Amino acid sequence: MTGAPALVVGSGLVGAGIARRLAAAGDPVTLVSRHPPLLPPEGYGARWAALDITDAEACGRLLDRLRPGRVVLVHGPSDVTWCEEHPGEALAAHAGAADTFATLAPDALIVLISTDNVFDGASPHNTESTPVSPANAYGRAKRQAEETLLAKAARAVALRVSLVYGHEPADAGKWLNFFAACAHRLRCGERVEAPDDHWTTPVLLDDVAEVTAALLHAGHPLPPVLHLGGPDRVTRAEWATVVARALGAPADLVSPVPRARTRYASRPVNACLTSELLAALPATENITVRGVREGARLLASAFAGPPAV
Ligand SMILES: NC(=O)c1ccc[n+]([C@@H]2O[C@H](COP(=O)([O-])OP(=O)(O)OC[C@H]3O[C@@H](n4cnc5c(N)ncnc54)[C@H](OP(=O)(O)O)[C@@H]3O)[C@@H](O)[C@H]2O)c1
Image (cartoon, rainbow, N blue to C red; front, side, top):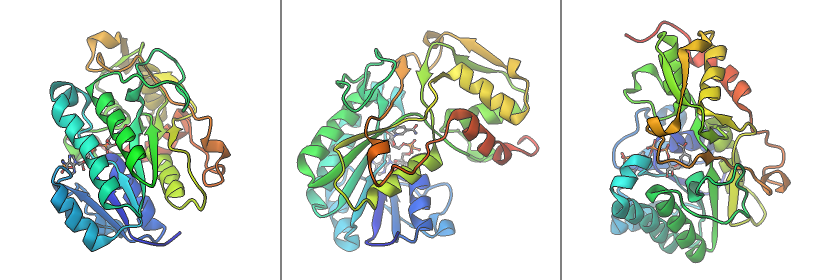
């Protein structure tokens, strides 16, 4: 699985996971963001360059230099609450970057990592044929990015991904994913409050990276929109209990609470994705997307050891 250079735009939780997977397969990978990522990508065979995606001229210079055959748009802003407070900036960043990369990288295959927030949460199962109705400013910005990219790029896919989870170290400062936040707190014997009326289909970071890499290397045409969710539809409270059990922590440390009392109040009630297409594509038909119990079992050892002080 090697070829033309790959450019991963955004070096956070999801971008770094995808870059690591592409580098492991032998692809020359460059990761970009405004600030260096927490984990230096040289450690896993990729490299990092500074870029602000709102600076179209800088994007053009980078693309002239790298000439990537594959681009993954996986940048922020990703904080739903921040986007709600800064809807114009969120829209400009997401839709603007889609426009910039579609225009300036016309020969590249571009995968945009999108979100279940393009749905309002009314349906417990959102497939590729469910009509979109963005839940919030973040969802509107991502939907506009999808539309712009799919209208302008010759080869592009909007890969809508459910809540992603994976390992983050105890000293990361602020954990970006729900699983890691729960796991670190539960290990320390801390209580975790989680909504019992907010459903999601969590998907393991490694599975997101696997599917993205397979799409980038598919030797066949791809549908414009694909969904990637895990096979289990769970509430955050149920999921936190699964995490506790996998870590050997008391399950009663998890307190189920109403979503309205939490920071997830502006999120869709059903943040769930299922795919009618992924399992039938030659590129992805052999990929098994793992459920929350297997994901927790796989990650548990990474969270083992004495709690951070
Ligand atoms: N995490 C999930 O569960 C999930 C699920 C579905 C979809 N997604 C999508 O995946 C994308 C990334 O999510 P994530 O969880 O990896 O977010 P993240 O950890 O917050 O990472 C976002 C990355 O984007 C970079 N970035 C932000 N503004 C930028 C700018 N103006 N120019 C260049 N880089 C910029 C950030 O670095 P700097 O701040 O240093 O620039 C950071 O590296 C988001 O678009 C989100 O919609 C995520």
